[in-house]
Length: 482
Image (cartoon, rainbow, N blue to C red; front, side):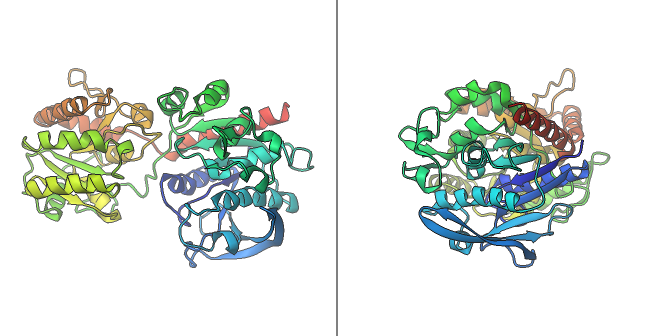
């Protein structure tokens, strides 16, 4: 059954990006469109959106009251994303400024976004079967639909799916926010949006959306526990029958060693030998000795504790005493900048470090490394391990979230598995796993089989899109059965 879906997001490639949500929003809707669904995207029109992504007004101006102010906005449409019309909520008072997030009035900015979407639907001639919201910035949509908009004709049957990309980000604000965004004070309860004396937007989405999902099956299980639930585990456990996990996919056109213009040699699963040239190119980039026999560890990451940098910082000095090399790329917390910089200065022939964002270099690290480090404390989905598999670079990961769903420990006895995995979040566990990788690298036949397994993995968006379509139908059925 072809569905009408409005995909609501605070960021989307190619329009605006700060993290992985933008990649999902730029890839999942086109995959759903290929399945025959009428899917459209809605996001704010930020100042950062490139003017070359042409858009034109299609509705408005409209006015809504937010925080006792009459706020005016229009709706523009861009066709920059092929096959997926994109609606841009144009409100200069809220969105024509530097940066997507972190403004004092973020509660108002994203409440307007949610209400503007519903207002546009009511005023227009296209009504979605499902609204698919993402993270806290769109979490008030199902709240409005079931409270302030519950009796409005034309939208009562719209189902809602809400996706949690990272539970740590919740949109928590002071109590007066509730009335400022047009919600009744009666919602400020433990069973409503109240959260330890404040207002929690994401909690509203978790309570009011018809169906919930997150970006891996393992993470859907983890967030129902105190260790990962960010104080929302009770609600998530209560809604466990409506909570699902769907792995994000990977854009196999962008991440393809056979066509990648950023790397030194093209290769594929049929002939992986040119990968050796990519390793040499990476070693030259970081001024490391050009040694094919030395295992080269790569890392492309935000340098933060969540990504496992605390235990990695303890482990690297031990590994540097072995015959290994490192190529690390990323930015983040100053503490890790300082620690890694000191190590790179102390071991210039073993460790290359780039404290920046460099897309071309990221591609080169994925292609030129032998192993890829992802020792995350938690990882809702993760794309780095999927990319590294695509490039025949073996992931070394902690068994959490999407890492657990995609990487299996390699067993040289039966030749199964696609990486190296540890469970306990301890430096000694990471060290032992990295050493297993080093030892396996020295066994040519076993390593060749491992690389073969890695490149045989398939995490394209096609399967994920089908799973999302099934959740849309579930949301529609649940909404209409009430």
